[in-house]
Image (cartoon, rainbow, N blue to C red):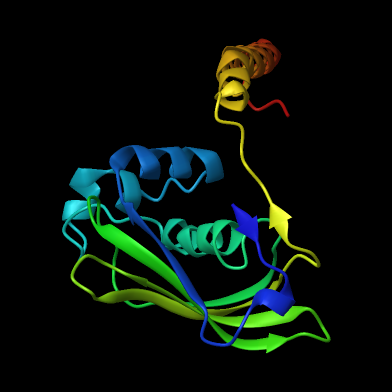
Length: 192
């Protein structure tokens, strides 16, 4: 991946990525951010909404814009400063989303650029639109992520420890709750 400096960027430059929405993507996102809105994860609940089925969180779709900015234009080293968003249509599981950015302005003296940001589904329907302000890297950045998967292996091997810690914390909370309840019951009814 190559991060472009402001001097290498012109008004009208464009970049995009394409991603299919999967249940695993949405489940991972919901778990990572804690957005347990059932319209994203409960087919029975979502069937009773105007959408008729689960939809992707809007911010998941907006995250695809971040991926374009961080990997394509301007690329590695870019700093995302602001983003306006307007969600126009729902994104459903198995939709194929194309996230695009286009340079509207390049302010070389401030090292800032303004981008038009859009996401469209496989039917060409725009599902999200907005504008972003981005600070590109001061110098060209060449970045090649590790291909050996060592980072993912490290996270995967640490995951059981995180699960164990969460389970232990939950056990402690349950024990404290039970002790508090038992102490309250020993005091008799009506006692503070």
